[in-house]
Length: 230
Picture 1 (cartoon, rainbow, N blue to C red):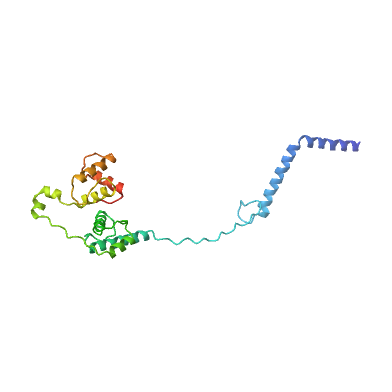
Picture 2: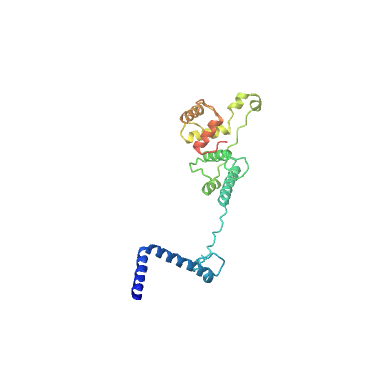
């Protein structure tokens, strides 16, 4: 009888285990996880809680990468300004430039350089650089003496003042001629050829076609040619 009861008991336990095997496996896994957490908290942690359950390898220290030496931002600008200032001084010695050697490439410097190139009969790149500076330094060309206007024409005759040579008109004439807007002679005097060239430029750029040297026209011509005109 005892053997039968024990056998029946084992069979009953086996039947229950088979019927609820998923629940039993889940409970076993939960119990194992609980024991692992308690073991980690009590015996494996060396630092403050929480710590990783399993010990991890210390991260490798990356070697320090030396930072590149800072390059002066204004080094190239200072060198360019120095070249421009030297060009201005050389043009001033030859009578083409009467401003300050400030290293700024403006309309006055641009006009002085073009006067020099015209007087020297040179057709070279007019970009301010060392090659241009050497060309000016090696040249012996001097600016012609300016023609004096009669005193009464300068003071009392507005028409004579209007027809007198203008540096602004001279720069505009050079720009129009260099970029193919007409057969314009750089005289500084507003003449019919200059008027026609201005109208042609205004027509192509969709500006009011009136031949007037307006501020809008000067700004547009300067932007198109990339040349300072004032």
